Length: 367
Image 1: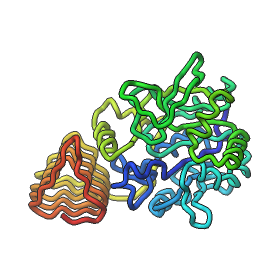
Image 2: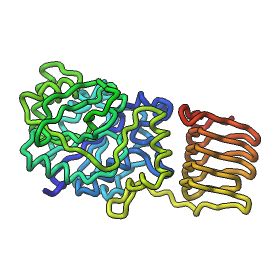
Image 3: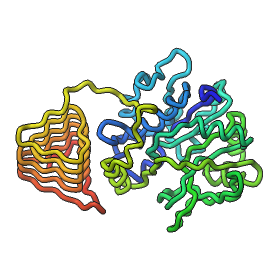
């Protein structure tokens, strides 16, 4: 089936509170990742690569940077007279309290759509998926709702769904908010259903005063609806804390995780034209992702540097994430740290966290 008949809904603010250090000035969707991307790039690129041409982005707060990043949607070929990308902020300035509130506010947008199906996804899942496999499986199985899931240790999310799976991927039980220490089937919050069913469930939720999408709509209807799972065996990691953000970022420096990026399904992002990275005569860079516009005169090991980062002579950066346009002064040392945009580390200063407790320095701070 052509995914052009599927409406995409992206929750850009889902689980912002779990990454509060990075989301105090931005949404989860606009959190920088992997040297040049934002988290929303992965879900949005997966939708576009699958053939989806109409996407609504739900926002509730701190979305100025997200709007600046997405713009008209041109880098994703979503700048169109018809369909394309649409921002869905709160009506009359009221902030959404939960996922159901957000969907209820989107009902006019959803109802006006001519798409037969809806695919909903969060921004805190780092993956590069072919959604056609999920959509085709949903239709062939005759399911009312299909939930993409992963097998492993469930992330520490307040509304995470763990699933009991029977034959033919039929979901027999849904537990909400439980994160067992052993391996389980946990939802990636990638959900497909017909647009008509979503509208009916939302109108019913309004009547019942439901507040929790996972518990009051999904779990409550396991017996009444045909809800099936779609197992994801490829790379998919869920960010549920600053630590997991750091760990998943560091994993990208290992070759086995580079399947996230491939020529057949590229990850698109806003382009910033800049000069190539410049390496000084005494520079030393090993096992690192270094974006264009960087100037490296010191030493960089096992780190991720975003665009425009300057590492001065004698400076040493190890096991760290340095975001856009930050400056590391001469003979400074940075280890196991996450530096937000425009951070300045003065010459000779030393800052260090640990691999199990990375140090975070906020946007624009001078140390």
